[in-house]
Amino acid sequence: AQSVSQHNHHVILSEAASLELGCNYSYGGTVNLFWYVQYPGQHLQLLLKYFSGDPLVKGIKGFEAEFIKSKFSFNLRKPSVQWSDTAEYFCAVNAGRGNNNDMRFGAGTRLTVKP
Amino acid sequence: NAGVTQTPKFRVLKTGQSMTLLCAQDMNHEYMYWYRQDPGMGLRLIHYSVGEGTTAKGEVPDGYNVSRLKKQNFLLGLESAAPSQTSVYFCASRLTGGHQPQHFGDGTRLSIL
Image (cartoon, rainbow over all chains, first blue to last red; front, side):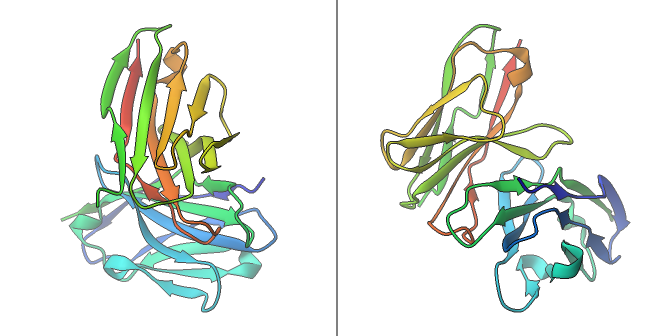
């Protein structure tokens, strides 16, 4: 089964700083990639996803992620963070093109943005 | 359109007690999932269902049972609760297709004393 690694456990930034959260996965075949965000006390919400086409995908709230197949990575970026981006971010990978149900989540990265 | 609804939102149990968590979705999704979320471990899949009347084990199924008698409902049962089952439980559902994102409920915070 595939595994997902998020290298940063807790990131602290000031407002307007740039953000990059790392995500690496272990599966060698075709993958579907997702980033979810969980605001304090809320459920997970989809930020963006990649399954084919342009490896640079744009999501909601100014977030984007780049799929680099050779590096097995799907890093999340935002040019300028806001205090409201304080949340926990989860990378998730689902292998294959069919109805594979082996979705794996990373351990999450907690982002704190200081005003 | 409520999406994915979980009940209850909070519950405290004593060791050995049983309970059932209910997940209901109104999006006509085929696939439904139960996860547990623990600090530093992300979400781990307990059980899932690919359609009415079917269930399958996930990554951490021990101590839990599930049922999917109706397409819109997915029940998670704890027959004899243990302190190790203290966690936040999330239900999710999605459309057919591995590229489809999951839609999550608000979670159930469960404490086992």
